[in-house]
Length: 212
Image 1: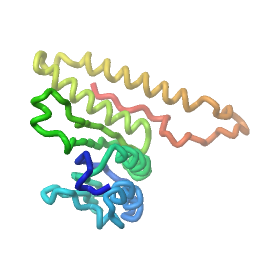
Image 2 (image 1 turned 90 degrees about the vertical axis):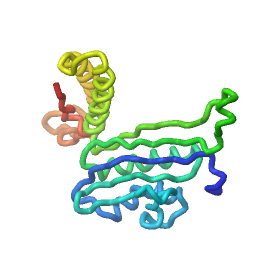
Image 3 (image 1 turned 180 degrees about the horizontal axis):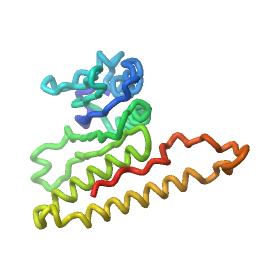
Image 4 (image 1 turned 60 degrees about the horizontal axis):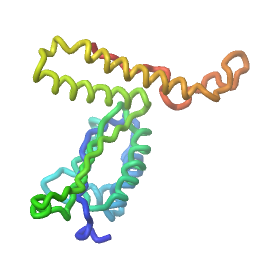
C-alpha cells in the first residue's frame, strides 16, 4: 500500500527503560515490526518519523532508554506489528512502561463532521515490562493518576486515600488471580518435584508495590 493512500496516520509515543545488558542489535530486532512496516531495511533507516519535527525512534545507550515519538502512515494491520513489538520489548524492558498509539483518520474532513459523520480516530494504550507484576504496576499508577486528577476537581487530595486503597485492592485481586492461574498444572513442589526452581517466567512471586 502506498503511504499516500493510507487511511491512517499512526503516532507511537512512549519511553521504555531497557536492561543495562540490552544491545542495539537486540533492540533493532525487537522494533523490526515497526521499521519493517515503514518499508525500511534497518532501525537506523526507519527511525525517522513521517514528520520532520518529531524526534522519531531514539535509543539513549547511556541512559538505557528507548524513546519513541514516531509517526507512520498505515492501516488497521499495523496493530499486529504493535503486538509483535510489545512481545519483543518485554524481553528487553527493565521496568514497566506505557506506550500510547493514536490512529488519525486521514480521510475524514470537516465537511463530513458537519454532516454528522464520525471519524475512525482511535487511541490505544499498550504496556510492556519484564514481568506481569511490572506491567500491572504501571497500569495501576496511570489509573491512580487519572482518577485522582479527575476527583481533585471536587475533593482535596488528602481525602482520596480510600479511593486509592480500593484501586490497590482491585489490582491485588487481579495479581493473585494471575499467580493462581500460573500455578495450575505445575508439578507438585517438594522433594524430587520437577516444579522446584521454576518460576514460570512471569515474575509472579512479587506483588506490585502499593502507594498509599
